[in-house]
Amino acid sequence: MIKAVIFDMDGILLDTEPYWQEVEMEVFATVGLHLTREECMATTGFPVKDVVYYRYKQKPWNNKSLEQVAKEIVERVKEKIREKPLVMDGAIETINFFKIRKIPIAVASSSEMELIKTALGITSLINLFDVIHSTEFEKYGKPHPDVFITTARKLSVEPEHCMVFEDSINGVIATKAARMKSVAIVHPQMENRREFEISDLKLKSLRDFSEKHWQYLNSLD
Image (tube, rainbow, N blue to C red; front, side, top):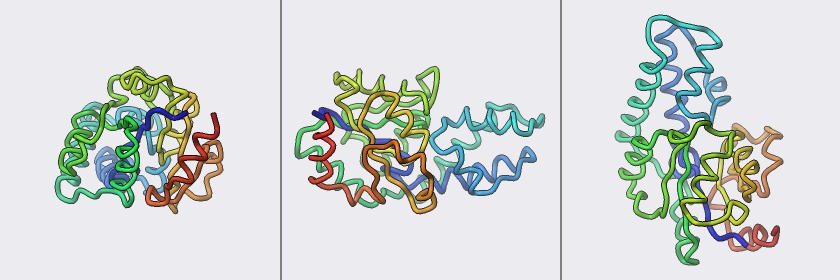
């Protein structure tokens, strides 16, 4: 039986993935690394410090520290969220689906906690969640399962009784590694990626989630 539900933030609750891609292209260009949107999509779900280190290993630079580049990315993404916060279609309805059923809900994100609180605060979602956790406080980010395992512990629920909504391949891998039920929200630009097949359920949008899917996922125990 599923006793708690965990949401990723970027691309699940908030339409921020395009912001991350735009900002990464802008900031990495300042250190001589010119990326396409598709290349930025390849690191979706990684903590920003891991993205910066990954890009540095690809093509080292010396005009800025890795910490400075990571900070610039986070600050610019926060600016974009403040300018135009966008809640994903179906997010409120899905949150309410579990609230009505008194199922504890949490956020487990690769974004830094300050950014998570800023984004959820601006969109008035922050008080709807029982637990909010970030890979910032874990030794390893997604695809390692640590952020989900810690979130389950904070919810006082065993990992095998948790379900996760994720939109990144790294997030889905982390979910399954944590022995949790996985619902993959597969955006159009990722629909041909076969890695999502390891999830327990694939949907195009949160708005598609229904009682039928809830019953199905509970039947997998």
